[in-house]
Structure formats: structure tokens, C-alpha cells
Length: 184
Length: 230
Image (cartoon, rainbow over all chains, first blue to last red):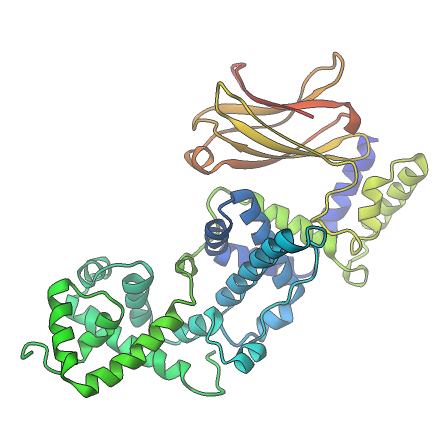
């Protein structure tokens, strides 16, 4: 019986699934971000790992969406992860038997209809900033650093931090307010 | 007023709340009397709401800490879900399928269901007969949630382990009923990360699924960290 089982496993490995490389590269690039986000939202590492698996699986199933995605890939993945988490929480609260229902993947069209600026579009817009502007914004806003701390982390003058922030904010504002055109 | 008069470059950092208190007060005082700055600032406040849609974790890069176990599990699920038409039927796969069909005839049906109909069984629902148990050892403080999935004549063990101190060299052992010897389903040394955040392990053991009495974590020098009866 043991030999049967071993044959079965080898069979799975030799039949390498198409798109496996996609999952691998998404994991290498975005895994840390996804897992940290899911851990914060679920407060449960095992559940968070399951959410990451499910997110990557969904990315693999919707590889075309992901390729044609108008925002950022990172934003798409984080949005899917959040949807999975909220949907599971809702399923647990309301319909304990239907935990496996299909969940929508984010669609830029729908977001446009709702006129909602979401993580995908904002991250997409941030990708269009210069690396210097983006770095200042990340340190100053998302990592909660002061101007002085940001200056020291990035090795630039405090005055430069301020002016880059100003130009970054203006550029973002301009990108996000363009009606109908989605950042790429 | 004079020092920040129309120094718009401060408005970005001001809107994001990143100025020091002295500068912040100065900008505040200037903006109060400057319609141009007020207008621009209003736009920046809108933008700040947009920025808040993005979680701070969005700016972490690379793979998660702690090895590629999660990747391997994910890839396993990908392989399980490959639709029939996209699966590459290599001669080895066909041969394996034949062997598995023979196994069905011999009565070991559980694993085969997953192999031949990958679309109908999602990896989220473990195979029928999977047993899950949890225990915390009051003395060591170590805890483990263990899931024992039946295979044809052997078991697949998924374990989430927490509370084992870093540096401990451990084995996961599957204990059969009766007087059979414990089977080592894996061995490792606990990392700092493993101590802090817990550890997920997978292992296998050649013991009939209904013969598993317990799963335990034992150090290589013989101390039992936690034992989970099934």
C-alpha cells in the first residue's frame, strides 16, 4: 500500500501544473506583504497562511485578469486577501454552512462605477512616481516617520524630504483625479 | 507668518502630519490667512483619504520569513486543482493513474478521488476521515494543533506548533496504537522565528490512519514538549 501512495505523489509532481511559475514568482515578490497583512487582519497565523494560499490560488486561476490589471499587482493581491477574510468572517457569522462560496475578484470596472479610489488604483498611481518620491511617501506616511527621521533614513536633507513630499502628493493627486484613465 | 509665507513645499508634509510641532504651528498660522494654500490643502486632505486605502504592509517586499513551506503547500493546491484539460498526461502520470485505479479495486478509495477528479474536491475540505486535535502541555507551555489526513495505508500530518523554545532540536512522532514503535514524521531545530510566531510542519508516517493514537513533539534528548491524543 505504501508504494501506491508514493507513486501517487510522484505522479503529482511530474504533472507540473501550468502557471506554477506564476505562483512561485508572486510568492517570492509579494508573499511577505500578503502574509503580514493577513496576519494583522485575522490575528491568527494559521488562518493568515490559508488566506495567502487562497489568494495565490485565485491569482493563478485569474492570471488573465492579473495580467490585464490596470492597477498594481500588489494591490490586486491585497484586495483579494481582504475580500477572502471579510467573506469568511461574514460566512462564519451569518451562514455557517456556506464557507466555500465563490468570492468575486476585484474588478476595476466595478470600482469605477462606484467611483471608489481603492488600494489597487492608489498603488498603481504610486508606481508612477519617481522612485525618490515614492520612497519619501512610504517612509513619511506609511512608516509614520517624521521629516527628520525620513531624511536620516534616506540620506537626504530635511528640506529635500519636504519638497519631494510636496511634489509626490501633487503628482498623485493629478494621476488619481484623471477621470476615466486608470494608472498603469 | 513671514518664515513660511507661501512656502508651499511644506504643505505636503503638513497634510500628511509629518512636520514637527513648531513648523506645524507656523504652517497652520500661515494657512489660516492664505486662501491659495487653503485650496491646495483641501485637495491634499482628499488625497490622504486615498492613501489610507493602502495598508502599510503593502510596502514590504520579498517572500515571507520562515522558509518556503507555505509556497510548497500552495503549489500542492495548484497541482490538485489543475483542470483535466490542462493537465499534461505524461506516460508516468498515466502509469500512476493505472496503479491508483488498481488501488481502488483493492479498496483504498480516498486518495484516488482527489487524483482523478481534482476539480470536484477543493483543498479547503480535507479528505473524509481527517481527524483534528489540539493540546497544550501545561508544563512546557508548548501547544500543537494537528490534522491527520488518511492516505492509503499511511497518514499525512499537518501540525501547527507553538511555544517550543528556540534552539530545541525536535522530532514530530506519530504514535501507533498497541505496542508499535513511534514513527518519526519529521525533525528540525526551532528557530527564533519558530519560537516567536509558531511553526507549521507537514510530515508523513507509514501507519494505518485508524491506528494513530497520538502525535507528539519530543526533543532529541527525550523530553516530551507536547502530546496530542487523537
